[in-house]
Image (tube, rainbow, N blue to C red; front, side, top):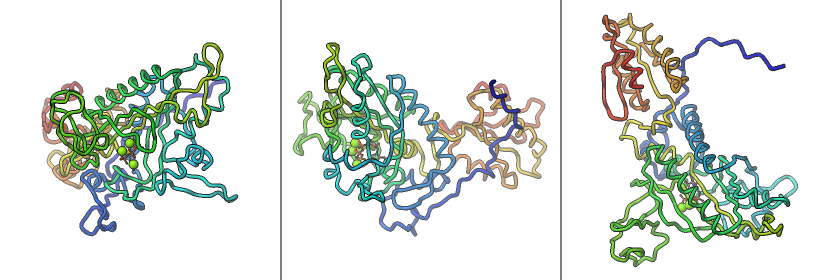
Length: 442
Ligand code: ATP
Ligand code: MG
Ligand code: MG
Ligand code: MG
């Protein structure tokens, strides 16, 4: 028999006084514990707002509001990856050295690989990426048919890289979240089509997040393969140098061009403008590089075993979060992509003992009713119950944290036709609205 639904619980509003967001500027202020480590705006804002808390170099506690944002980001990534046929799985982080020796990356990766031994002395690494693991998995399926391809497998998991210089908060960590997808196709032509469709999915993803990324021709590094693009978010703090042609669609990471290249290698006439970018995604066409090594094959239409064509596609999940804050925020107020703000609305009741105090219950009612009237706001409204503080002080905090909408319940709420002050963080606009007007706006 089906389990009965749990009895409905009393409604609980998230209260600002109870949100766990410990501010910590120890690593980004003048007395920095990490002498000399490069910091940046997003790191400072995220530590100040209690979104992240430094643990050891390159590692952070992701505090509750960040986890809410991450979950939202993961949902959007899932939608876009599944729209192109991606199936989500989860692979072990503890990776056997044998696989990495087979691909020769046990040596090639050098010090970037976190290595460890088990109690029997066997070597392992903490996965920095999963080409070896996923190709082994697919190679074990002896009956993989051409009818099952393309196959796209992806995961969103922690990756480990012993970066020589972890810095800039979540932009360059030693332990971070990545979405990594791997594609398996019957032919080079099919693999190129899959490659294109994933690049389009990346473009859609960044458009939905309101981030203007550029897709540039890129180097294949130690992942390998023959065709590769990076998705770069233009920003001064970015560590990659980009060249974009003023006359045609050519754009590239400088790493791919010879040092003396000035004019455009595509149209030959345009001049290349240099800018800086944060690498938020990277796609690779791998061909048979890994499938050959691990003997990953499918049976073709003549039932003949054939080596699979592969591609791989990374997205820096935690890096995207920090990069978005980096490019959208002001020096002291966080701005989120609408889809990722930890909470959408903050309601400010009047100060205790003020002239408008009578409107307190209206504010509580307002905070509850928004989530009920608008399904997309369910669980997205917080009440700043620190009514011993002035509206002004709490408003400043709310702006700093970047709630897309702040609703002030003050004097106006006591008028015959109650009005509320609504601050829209994105366009810096303040409007006075009735409850109906407010519901329309939201
Ligand atoms: P970078 O050039 O910044 O070192 P990468 O080229 O080594 O990055 P990839 O192997 O292409 O990284 O990994 C896929 C994605 O993972 C990158 O595009 C980036 O968004 C993210 N990423 C890589 N390294 C880090 C890191 N140390 N911290 C956070 N995100 C990272
Ligand atoms: Mg790297
Ligand atoms: Mg790179
Ligand atoms: Mg890369």
